[in-house]
Image (cartoon, rainbow, N blue to C red):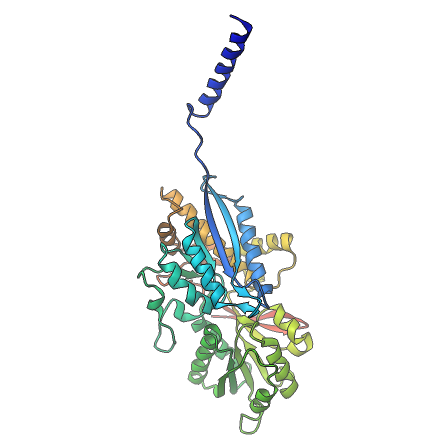
Length: 417
């Protein structure tokens, strides 16, 4: 055998050995991509809350090493901004664009969002007709998104044109938050209350539930009106409220709103006209439970104000919740915003659904299959505790915690059912 023939023969032998090691010459299966997107306002005052949601989602993907089903699928997570610089908060046009873009991209198997209930109202019908493409919200609380009630506005069925539910949330709805809030304000010794809201789906929704509950429990509602989120100030309104209760101020003011809608200015003018928050109690929902609200108003002005958030405070969560907080703070620093753990749990949910589908021999790239797997989640041992989704897509967890501003930060003061 010549030297040249020997070299060729040797090459063929080595090549055949390599092919045999690779399975008889068959090319390895390509790793498919499962794309997950989030849609929340990354512009404006809500950023202090939403950035922690995105951070938590990224943390969970990193913990999964960016793969699912034993490495058969690559996980990709993208956070989309649904706010605009023009509005400085979530923008209906941008959210609609996000939903349409997600519907058209067949590699997307989950839509984690939205942050604002009004945004969800726009996206649910679009994504419902796209597979349906499942939505898992870390923050929406308007009851009408999942359930209709004679006492609550909302046309639930119209959000689901395909007649198949595709929307879930890991946070309790405002029919719970508003009821707990009214009872909490009464427990502070208030007998009269004036209600304000920002006229958005979320803000007005929780304010309406608060009002209905207040009347049921004997808390007198002196007035209820919507505010202009773009007003330069609210001194005239606060002056009017200061004499609305038989010539004097009410015992408390409850505001249904998000921080983006001039919440800090509203509190500034309340304190300027009626004094600190010990004189006339001031409370609101989770939309103002953010450091941005305190910083915008000033720590001295915000001192004593109350805000509620669904669920337990971080320090009272179970082992998995505690581990999340430890891991988060090791990577991103001190955690002060309550929605981070909900962002983590939404990602937890979709990763569990993917793994459940794979374990059953299904196809996790199929949107309808993933949607069914999400709704099938029961007795899930997650960062928030042990919980389940009901048929409407609502969580079984109903705890509500009230926080008070103390020395420039929100501090948990009580958890209620």
